[in-house]
Image (cartoon, rainbow, N blue to C red; front, side, top):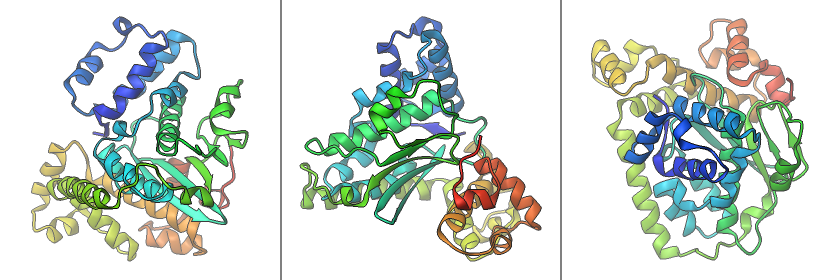
Length: 333
């Protein structure tokens, strides 16, 4: 099951309550889970944001997380980010340690043509598309954290992309993210000037940074090594990059498990082999379409599709558009 840490969602929940949401009218099971400190399931969060939006009538409710943004919302990864020498280094660590916050999305960082682009991709097997309020909350929280790290300069985004259609009123969005906004985009992203990455952080500390990274990396290693799903995902990624599309039996043999034992282990972690395979293909498809000149036929074969028609259908499912359109980064509702 795809989840978000309680510490991250606490900021979002606090924002909603401060904007007039009546907690007695919300999903009480979710609120109890929030009090327990356990990870919160994404379907529950999506439902809560939808309820809050309907209850308040405020389409911009998610943007309020900017006011409460703090690195601590990111959990363990906040320490190496705060002690990083520059904003660019902190952004890289935000991407590297994103799995410690949620397994429901993937962060990527692209740097080209003088632009730093932080991209958020939903997992290919997410049960439902994220509502606008949740997407806004994530973007506002991210920007708020980056501004907290750079209190003396606070870089304004060069632009922002959102997967939802353009709202009737974009004034609040423009206030936070600038005027270069794109809607119905294939993914959510924030773009900054490459030189913004060189901004020195006032909380930088070289000695502490080494310790902070070691601790965060140990937590990430525990997550990977202690989780069968993470081991499977890592193996699928490694082999798929080589053009080898492993099936369930081949993965089980590599991990020295029986096919049935692997299936049961994944079931205990509330994930399926098909979901992990889908996520691996999604991330590699993004990288090959956006960052290479390989032909669509080559990419389709590398991803393990039997024909380009299957690849086309998968691209529609992942990005809402064909592979050729995603490569050219066209927006289309």
